[in-house]
Amino acid sequence: TFRGFPTALANDTVDTNGWALQNFAVGGSEAVIKTFRRYGLYDDRVVLLEGYFNETLPAAPTQTVALMRLDCDMYRSTLDALEALYDRVAPGGIIVHNNWQYTSARSAFVHFRKERNIEYMPLHLVDGNAMAFIKE
Image (cartoon, rainbow, N blue to C red):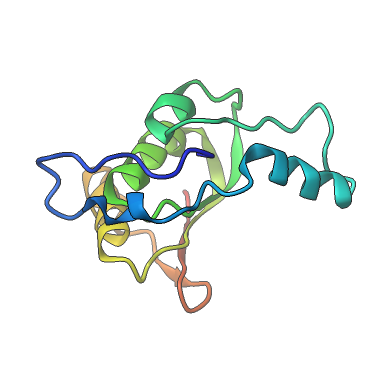
């Protein structure tokens, strides 16, 4: 987001505002651009979206997603990302949820799969913190 975490919603029973106390906005987009340039990866195809996921992802300038790796930490942010981008994931595309260890983010992932009736798609352990599935 380059802005840190959004405020948890009052009716959100799984998120807290504790995330807002974390300083994850350090360096901002300039730090990302610098890293991309260092590895020769920054060109006119790279688009950085600054803002909360519910504000930026619905209008993200992408049509097809092959790999979606979520690292959203919060319930609402995880759900916002899935709702905005899942339909753009191509069949055979991979959805990775990086924060399986966080109850709130995992709950959103499970909730989304249940709401979409895609629970039957097998989950695969990627590493100690991530689960993934392949979209049919």
